[in-house]
Image: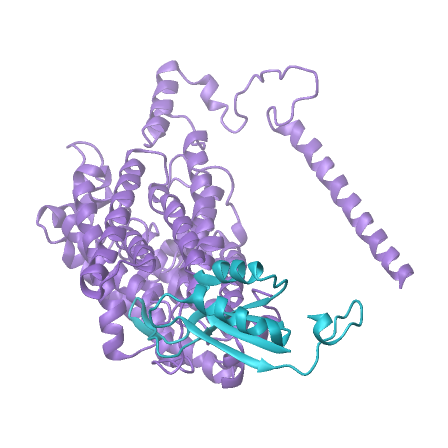
Length: 112
Length: 525
């Protein structure tokens, strides 16, 4: 089992979700996050006060999959989330020790 | 536990039924006196022999005098020549009651939302509590002493040296403040309505101050400061400018030493609060993290926008209502207020667009409020062209003071109370002396030969306008206002600082005043 954590541009979420659904992936968790990488922030001015806003809004998408499904899912995310401009985000793949479905007590691949 | 709850409910029920009984009794009592207050069901209201029990003189007067009386109400003039006793007029009273409610709406919720949106979310309730607390505290002070100290006149006989600076004691606890007009201030408006109208001004003025001190002044310190400030700064200043025996009331006081004019409160409301705000924010010091160390962005410009819109609408009561009649002067003030506000709200974001690259919503809001502030002393004295000029001034000078000047001197006027109200009010007071147009306001015109002089002829106001020297009197009024606000604030500010203290601890300031002072949060997720 692997966990995919993808940081993407917020407006790409629908496309990524649809692409993952087409692969038969049935669940995911999404969080609104803020952060920065190489993309620069912007300046906000409120009367005399100027603030540089470094942290930009992004979406963090988390999905845990059986090892066999990971490669396809990562490819789908990278393909749909890409605009080619700086700030497109990153995908991380992490190993997962176990998963348990609370309702049925199922574990491992059956639970994801 | 259940038993205890039941007994509490019983107690409440008993209190409620007593209250209802009281209400029914008073209604019955009122029915026997008042005409057609609540006609009996299924019976047509029977016309009473006397149209108004307070003025039986009307029915017995000649038709000529009756017409003269009604014509005086129509034109908001003195009905005395008709020989019929003064009474309130439903039209003028209706407008003044609406105006009073509008001005109250400027504070609750207008200013609360305008300021509330500009602070960080951890301090939004501290702004609301400040506005609410001041509204209630000032209402109590006004009833007990304030109205009388500002609009009373007994000192003119008991203590003539004091009379130009404070009114009198005859209306303490609203004694004699009933539904008949106080003809020193309005021929046709009930004195109780007039007093509540003026109360709403006394409420918003101190509430404005605490934009400058936002996010770092304890609630208790705010209330203590306001309590003293009303007696030391507001009541004397309001009397000097608007009281019948006031030191610089050019329109109404024939004996005014300084014949200055201030239609709706450029000096009394905006300069007093704005200059107080500057001194108080200097005594208080900067917010923790101010000056780039911590971002202090407004948490909701949507709230600020709603607050601005409520202020604008409410300001019609403030400015047009200050005619204290639904008359031609009110109509002119209504017009000039609209124009100056719209032009101010056009100019400010335009200046931003040119110098900062983008017209901001906060720019529109700031420009509108600045326009309203600067037109306030002028609205009943200038014509529409004057109002447009004032709008342009409002969109530029307060912009400079709350962006460039503030950044040079690095004081923490958190929400720009000084930048907009202090500077804008001062501009307005001075520019009124330049743009004044006697054609729009009969009080600025000499009466024809043979008639009794009006106050403006006796105290030199009309001469000053004719000689284009009114701005000198205005500058004197500005000087007195600044002196009173600055000295008063220095005394009260340090008094509060060294007794109960002004600021919360650094840790508490980080946590936010909502939890520290009020034990609650504006937004729970």
